[in-house]
Length: 185
Image 1: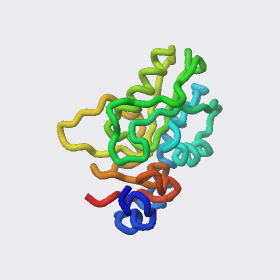
Image 2: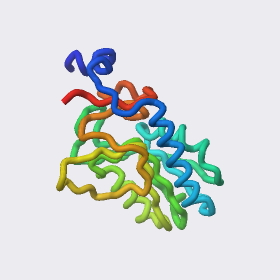
Image 3: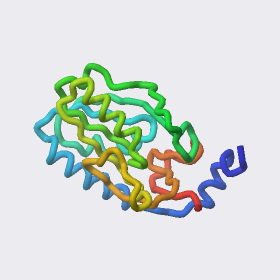
Image 4: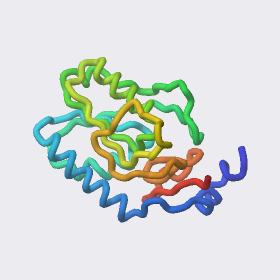
């Protein structure tokens, strides 16, 4: 492990600010308004994608002004690294509670889209009526690189760099930051 990986202070010192706390807060409020308009009469099951989605979910839920039920899923390809594996590792899959329900999946980032596409597919395979996906940020990938899923709601866009803060981590650190930063290069 390099000094960068093991020293959170160096990670933050070398990072650049992408979106400040006020911008993130405004984006969450805008998302809440749009989601409330769409799902006001649905009584959805909200599934937070752990662990990255927890900060975004915690900010968003109090602003959703309709009845909902809450649960979570946990799947990852990153494992405290800055690139994902081909293989998705499930820790908690969606269960029977999704059957005949509208599901709202909340996650921190739509990066390459592999994890979110699989979560949506699992919910639909288990009989979900509809799956709506909301993410705090979407990474702008290189032109021509297609994602297997499109989010229904996107708060902010981020450059094609490794970003952290607001639930996203850098080598396991800094999920707790209220703003979004990017690692160099």
